[in-house]
Image (cartoon, rainbow over all chains, first blue to last red; front, side, top):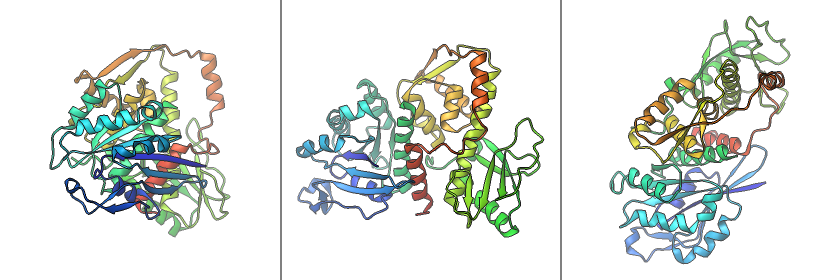
Length: 174
Length: 232
């Protein structure tokens, strides 16, 4: 059987890095040269990222990174079908990270309601505002109860922790 | 603050004993259990005088139990048998970790059940978080797991302990800390559990259900742990 988990977030939030941190295969993506100087990186993913893990018994866990740009939001709904859950990556360097969060809470509303999600906030060590408490209060106001934690997606253990917290929520709901 | 390491002091501790293995295999097993101490869901101490679980060479009869119930057994052998309570030689850390986690969870659950059996309170308190707590309350990976579970649905102390794999004392300490924040709601839900049902449940539950297949989520968790430990 095949199962999938989605990583979403703005361009530059670290979806490609997060998937590469845990995937057992070389991640596949559709990176192109970045022409948006505000992203501060040479390439960006315009399609999707893909990684996978083989589980005991032979099942595949497929890890998809959605395209970050809103103009690709039609792909979000396609990818969300049948997903186990969602990890939202936030880049705290951005002008309004809370507004970024809202984009994905709205874009994946059905998936979040049906399954579970975890919010991971990156670059908090250099950009402390908004803090985790503000994200938690905002999520509560939106009626969404999920973990929200500072994360460095370059660290495999921290990405694994995001996935473990997602699993815990799913187990508790089943 | 390191949120990604396990705190050994907060986990339930169990003893294990070893019988019938070659000296080199026994030494390797003990070394691997010590090396895995930071990763296993419970703490494991070699204590053959009072083991909670026996690690036995294939074909060896179960040791005579001095306690009220026989200790569960993990068998070690070379038959390539694929079973949760069977470790194939040569020993592999990820298989040891999975087997110890599984049997530890079962022991913990049976102890919680024993506590519940003596609990006459039919309205145990259930707890539910209204939102993710402040960072200063989440100083360990264990506390993040507890907070995540308490966000998901109302849980009694026993349920929280069972689902997290952490001792009831640790869970209670976290709930007490949360009570000071006003973020946790205490509910009273009637538990419909008659003595007759309890007896039937006790009769039907063996100390270790070694044949139960791992859930999808447990298999994903095991695979992720292997990625962190570098076993694949």
